[in-house]
Length: 435
Image (cartoon, rainbow, N blue to C red; front, side, top):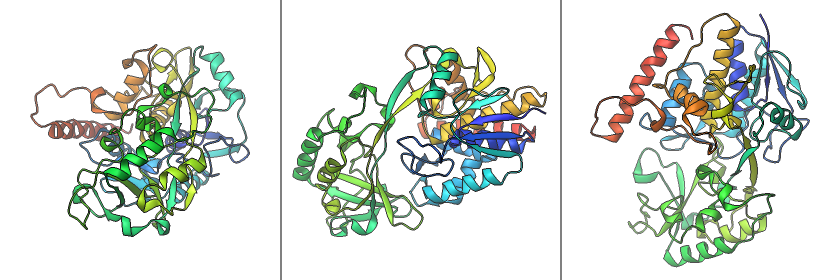
């Protein structure tokens, strides 16, 4: 049986390789790290999380919670490693990013059907191939892809948030709690009064940004917007966004502050915390100067500053089919953020589908055809045709792209739960059929 080459050992590439190998297909996994890294990468490990350490909501009333549930039922390697190295984050799934990535790397390197070949890929390999080289694909491979996919050079900009040490947070000005008191107190909450907030907002709007070639405020992905870009949209924008104080009363006064910055645990030991929603491309000294205006962070120690990078993605509605195959050359599939799926879990889902469908094709089986009633299938169908080509933008999974129930449900939450229950029943039947 033919082997498959997977290019890129990020979330999508590792998931695709795992699904292929688990179905008896030999895989050659090509990864340019550690010989070469992009500006966003830090670790030599596979499946690296370059922005937040959160995989977002774990609730079935949320579309990404459903997507994770589907992936778990289909033996997703990424979800298995994420669950094994989860850190407290309220109703979300967040991970110790280093321990999680080590687990992914060990599983991939330890699989008898996966051969890891290090070094940059500068030409598209022969035979069946899944390209999951990510939104930071190297220039050489990017040129090869552009030759196959004229007009592929679409892009947007992505940003990461800073990480600080817990011991440097001033707890005289902070407290631990989850919003509305739900679950365990997993977040450090850093309040600002009205005067402090206004001074912070004004400083943020005028702070000096690091130069990023070709960047302008219109080229950002809404789901990962730099905090300074958000601030420039209006004085109260942050108070209705990442600095929302609702459900977080100060235990010292019993009243909600004017604004709150939340810190979320970034490692299992609880020694590192990232500043939630504070993706930024300010110059490093400016990050320290402006963020120190938050009273609890006045002496914060930064182990990583925020940074921005350019992400490249395909015009997938024009180029790809529902199996993530290139229509012009079906032996080539793509997976991950370069297809236009946005988010860690969505990238994993595209890798899983590409791996499953490639394995079935090589084994002479009909396609699995994940339907629109499932989150995995709805995402692939949207990317391959449900979106409008020519004005295509990366998107997270959401209930709006899943097939409607066909009947009225009074509560939005209950409707979402009904959609999730239907999807998981379908996934269970597909699993019983050995998809």
